[in-house]
Length: 317
Ligand code: 0CG
Ligand code: SF4
Image (cartoon, rainbow, N blue to C red):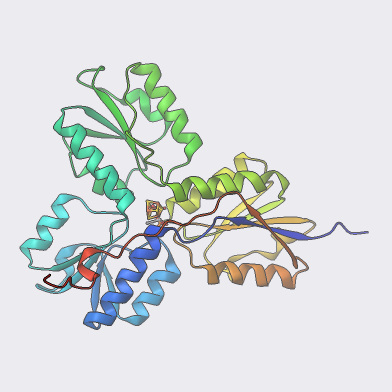
């Protein structure tokens, strides 16, 4: 008899509080001001979200100099450097800042440690927008370390005054390896005042770790440029999944992946709408994987208020 086919569905998965807020910010801005609304960079790293908002009248640009003088521009959830605020002000742009509050928290930490004249080691991925924004808060004090092997190149002025901070969407395990290497080099290394890797990134990795050992295949729904989604594929492979792939849509699934297997794990990155996960669940069901069991490792209840610029005006008294 053929082995039974089943799907394990990770929970939590999908939208985090920061993504929910950022996407809603663009939608509200479109409702309030009408199209077009400019958005600097992808509001979140998801192709479907960007395409859907584009259809509604959002115009995604790379830099504020592509936005007409005086127009509305939304800053993405990943945050911007002070330089971007300056150039937007120079062009009299009306800015709506959709930076996730948990990214802003890391910016505040960077500013504080720079003010106290620490050398700051920022663990993160070279070229990622979040890292560019955070490093831009104190370029003279911050150096980027992209993984454990990059630690060899770190040089500081005073090994007693070094702190590490990080991008919010890294692999927890790899970051701990990088920090271990840093601490071997600088025994008095200071830790961030609180976790920089955010709750959503951590929770999605914990859920994948719980299901991966039982899975022949883990399908992660998410876009290629989404750091937290990419990390889920790595976590799945490192924790016992025989195979794992990142897909934007159900149609990206190669049916050969399903040949001869019995358990498929499904999850999604923090920037991924649930409708895309449904698409995957429906497709695998058509190929015999109808039995779906949810693996829950945490409940999430966090929400963030909309950016200040979109909140209803307060009455005078
Ligand atoms: O995971 P990263 O930082 O690349 O971003 P994404 O937009 O995929 O999701 C979280 C946010 C913002
Ligand atoms: Fe904020 Fe974390 Fe979501 Fe990024 S992944 S938007 S830091 S909650």
